[in-house]
Length: 301
Length: 162
Image 1 (cartoon, rainbow over the protein chains, first blue to last red):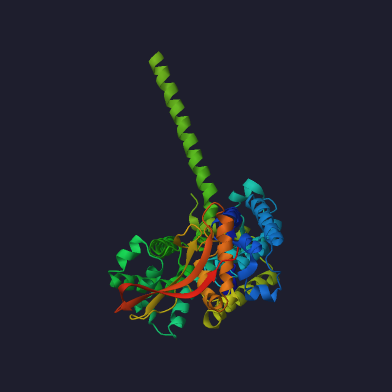
Image 2 (spheres, chains in turn purple, brown):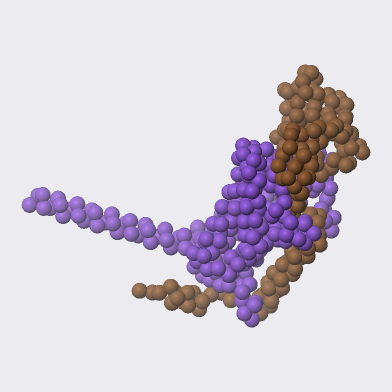
């Protein structure tokens, strides 16, 4: 039972509402900034090589008609889902539609590894029944195990992205620890030259230190699932720093994974915090007018 | 003054619980998902997306490796020779796609036609490509350091159809 409960912590529905808004809007950004060649592939399916999932489901070859439909459907239903009105209906449309969108985008011989958490998040979010609608949902403090499960799934996928990266590195070296001492970052920089990287090419030892920090951090990442409060925040900051370094050295941002770190954040506290703050401000303002009146009276006296 | 633990306890009491079936199914889905991910990382390839291995930059590169970099060079109808910008805004095709399909392009250089078509479609006012060359640049590593400039090698040539 303890095992089952770990997968279903009771978490306030407000966190789901925030995630819905942020992630559905992020999908729209993603379609234009990251996986943005899906419609091009509909126009020119020459290099289309369907991935396993597309073959199992026997999905049709991308065409102008189906990729344009996907585009319009995604924009409309992401906007609906982001409002937290009819979030489940919108969510059940967005999840398969975006999965297909990304499948097409990656069906040309190159697969990116930054979409796991986002795609799974889209599939689990609509399983949560919302307690309140629209604006009210951002402050809904009702705790729910269904919400907790969805959030736990996203957290697991975020962490899996790192942990499984370290496993892939061990596997890539024939299950040895050759990767951190290899010239992989040198290789990456030679193929994508830029000023920071070219400076680092003269100091291979620094690249080796980064490789060790990277693989050890990735391998230990599951610990974050059991950390609490500040320690968990520290773990999250380590990986955000890791992404900043990756962006500087490899020009790889991993934003679709980064945005899913929000599943760890106590977003349900935003509204109470904001209310307390504005209450305090209002209180202070009242105090001040009170002071002013007293001062006036004194001056008049 | 309400302490945090009291607040939490109150929350626990009002929490919306899952029934045994709802909970069981969810835990099962999570466990199967984790199983698929582990399976993907241990045995599968990128084909198994989203359950494939996280293999970005997971290869080990030896200290004395030759690093290859594939690019496409174009002769334009203005008589200039340029490197084709291999991205969506450029010729509508990414470098990774070209690298992944190098073998096929070498066997059938006509696949390069769509690079020229993509460029012409996206940049109608710029000089057209008349001849394309798929080139592999090789950079040699010695003891983990870059040794000298890259050596180019032409893998495929395609005279663009109008």
